[in-house]
Length: 370
Image (cartoon, rainbow, N blue to C red):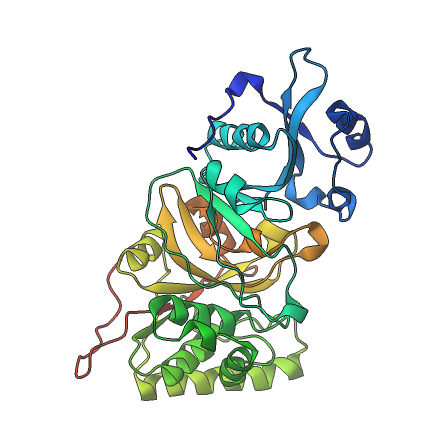
């Protein structure tokens, strides 16, 4: 079945979805039932709005979709579509194009694979996260609106508040084919975190050393543009001291096993160049822009489309209606990612680049000049 035609821009209504006004607005859908999940969580941090298709009278709506998105990103997510579903989805796609976005996703609460395919969407692989730690629908779909080749890594959501670094490294290696997809599980998550942790977080040098130990054939470069311990400012002085010692030990170990530490600021150009070489960049970011709280967090940069880098975020904020569908294959505009990756008050940048596995006998090269 060919994809449905997209609704003309002039036939689209887009209005904020707010608790005090949404009931009145939804009356325009008449007999179409609205899922309870639309009101089950506070989505206000992710700019929820209704994209609707008005009827001939201009008053009632024949279709509508609840959409949201993380701030400072380049996508829209359809939570549900009601009424004339193909028309509602086509309206969202047209709305996203009008805003110059890279992607539309569709949570699979009620969407069928057939409806998604007819609207030009492809299925996302279900997450590997253990069921007791997973949040969100069983299925999800994506439609890209910009050119570019983005291959899909397996998605795994971290099962603790502190294992994001380990999960991004494991996802990178699974995407590269170095780690079997089925080996990405909680035991692997906690095992790699235990080797990389600075208690409880993973700082760049310790993470890079742990990755090299786990996969000796994978070239690893740490990028850290300050020559001091990091991610310690929120601890009292006595707690900082022993963690700083562990970071100095990690630097010694990096030198011993051949993990270079590049002191230059890692630019967006360099990140894109690494992705173009089919390398993976584990990037330390602040969640202030996407989630509203300034917490350091690791994400995986693995793909690129015009104007945006595609990341995997191992954490989703379920209390805001955020699910793995948001966090998986997430396009972030280059300027937004550049801002997110400036961490802490003094603005350092930390990352770990993992290259393609070396053939036996090959000698790893140093970091490229970018």
